[in-house]
Length: 424
Image (tube, rainbow, N blue to C red; front, side, top):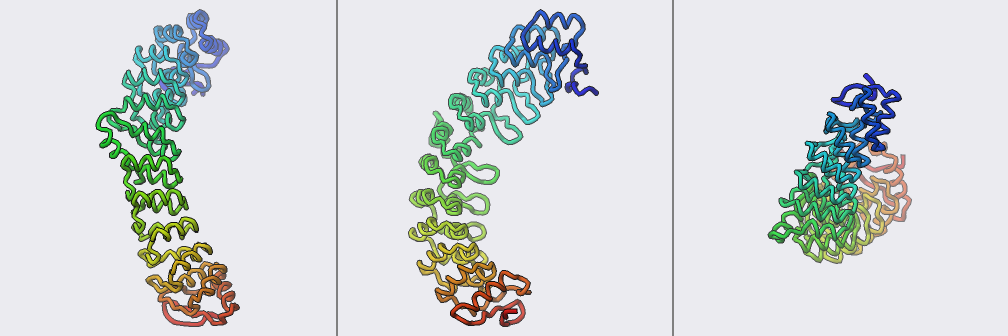
């Protein structure tokens, strides 16, 4: 089969006359196009990308030629190799008069290309306001999303086409297409677009509160997204419009958990000022302080501690924020926690101390700090490590500890027996 064949269209060979025919169509030369057709050139002849005379004429805005081709039997919804029809192409190019003609001649307004693009999506993407308006008035469906989940509203918002955004919102009477657009605005800290998205002339307060707390498939609200990026401005707007400050996504994650993990202190402060629960726990028992400590965000840790974060909070496995900091080799966080009276020998359910954790991970600086703060080098754990000598980083750490001023041999316990760890 010829590589120039179009889906659903007759095959044709790109002879010199065919090439000239397509050039004439692109140039809008009706007389030459008609002459080629009279001499037997197939009206469905296309180039290597699958564009035929109708596509090329539509792209260039040659309305009269488009009408002539349709009169002579050119299929109005013939598609290119990428699945684009003449209406897609005219919409992308902003050829309003051609768009009107094609729609009147029965073009499928909601046809989707291979990637799920509709003519409305393409017009919105390129900021062709009047084309968008016409398509909406002629049953263009803005709820249809691409393979990536983007609607015309989402792409217009991302591109910053405010007039198109406003127009699409005017036609979104049921609020079906405002997400993920609101999440995009939250990510960009775009308060203007977010305000437009939350605006509704009919029962605005109720509508805004319903949408501002709607979630994506992953369970995150716009406030979660804004917290992740540290976008205080749009977060303030969302909160003012009724965003739930303690909304729990999957696994019990709140916006404060997200902000703490990212170390966004301004966001942490905003959420706390708006009543965020400082001791909220995820499904695994992580508090915001755990999240900040595990990530090594000293300012966030300090702020949370100053605001009364529970320093003794434990995960389901009994890990405290101190354990988390020790595991991550976050020396300054360990210092802060100890300064705020975190017990240096606090233990997990298996009686692991922060020193056990630091030794296991080979974190020399944290190990020394903990020992300097009088951590017990002989603390015993119910479950620790089997085959401990196979872990070279642990062995190196233990050798290092043994050279410290404490001068004591560390005692560990496997699941079966107690024993001294030697230098061997």
